[in-house]
Image (cartoon, rainbow, N blue to C red):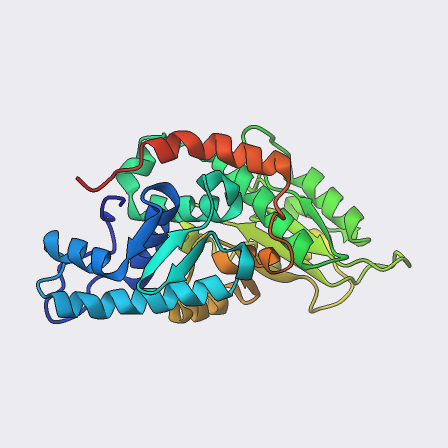
Length: 312
């Protein structure tokens, strides 16, 4: 199994100080990238042997909670799930992990938050990671919202674009007018928090289309980005014909528990796509990720998987 997370696992004597989402991600990561089989007794033993829990019975309670959450996660993506349950054990159903590229990628991105030392060993340039996650979000949305169109607008060092050009593109795609870019933004705005624009056009070309403006946050600083893109800015940059369009949307590779999902939804004030919503295309089609993106994810993830810390 993988080494215990550096965050989210604390000594638990009279109360559970092991975060449920972190525990579930640790189990999923161990399944995908290490052992291929994990049982409830195994997990409880590890938690006691490493002194995270002092009592086996108390540890079993938390592990039981994790199993319930993992089963819930599995139902959200159906037959495309990379693992299966048998009794008290859960088994990896794919070999290797690259056979489930979207799932593996999201779990690995989440683990970077729980294993910051491991993640930090690959440097602080997150350009490629961010681009891959934008691409994954784009393909997920295209598979989920049939008939909708998706355009990537995000700025990066490898593909820099000035905001004025991005605004021109967005306005043209949506058949809307361009606003006053100089007045409402600074020269450091880049894409003004916009990574993807998703819309459902009509053939009349008169604008006023159902539109989503996406922020794609792949890193641990995602809470700081929940309010991006700022619609107060974007409704000045583009002259939308009607109030109510566009709406905000936010994607994250994390699997948010219900209470955190509610809080994040409130801050986004729009559509929130966490891990299992992004993986929902698997309910219709098992291998929905494009071959090109799957290969790029595999190339990015392979050296990271090889250096994942293991239990001693």
